[in-house]
Length: 402
Image (cartoon, rainbow, N blue to C red; front, top):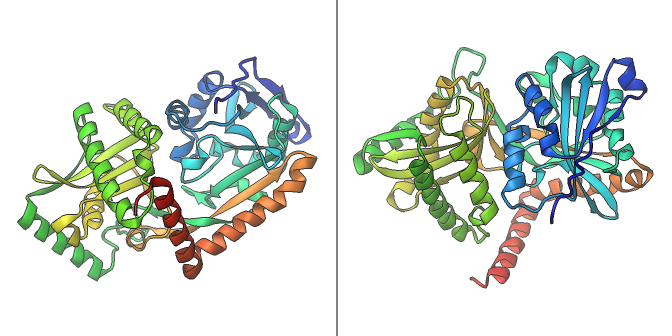
């Protein structure tokens, strides 16, 4: 699908709630048109890594299936941008649905906003801003947000003033400082710390001296990327699922962002590897802001090394590296896996569907009901086991394997 870019000048609106706060809303119809205000805002904004201009721009260039139309909503005070929502609009279920660009592969949606303006971004102001999508040439019937975090780096989420339901998956969110004088790795249960120390000793004895290093050259990016693909392929084969990260758009996205980030003081994407001597035992690919690291995907070796806690050892080194870089919080993405609870807490995130037209008001309750059902399946072990078995059978049928 090719995205339609309406490259005319942005359309600007000011309705009652916006006007009462001295604000206006503009709708831009392309990334290039919105880039200057987007970059200006994100230097002082509260946002997750998945709303950085660099991430979304790279996503749009990587070959993923894109929305029909881009419509970037910007709330401003005079010439100063104070909030931004980068939407893609496509027709589904008989209506035009606006979702944040990159949502299908991101771990969380969020409003990009200057926290100094939080009190002025009332539900009425945000409602006026979202309503501009129905008045602009792009037009939308409803807005669908996925995986909204209740609080991000100390700030309550303004979007949760709208009706919402728990999302199907939890987000695993943590901080490097527990708030009681301990770092997160120091606060691990004694048994877990002992297991990681034992794994370190055994790995050193069997494989060589351990270290975790970020890729610092194109050659290192390429090597870690190749090892990641191989380790992930082996893991997915055992699970009976498709290796989506071997698809060309993911490979283009990861490699292009990692290479563009080399030497950058505030990188957007980083490849880390756990080395034993010269052998790579595990990898971590992360999307970042200057203060947050999101572990997008990881991989671990199989064979003799796999009997040790490779991801635990990897994270025990990686967290030290993140601290040195001034990172204060991190997440391990969506999806419920036991190993994540050692380092992070399962955080309930929320989906919200907000109608902005009559047709949207008819469809919105159905979409929210579907999200509730999906959470019920994913959070009920027996139902999720059945669903995973069906998905595995479908993958084998498509690939002709198994």
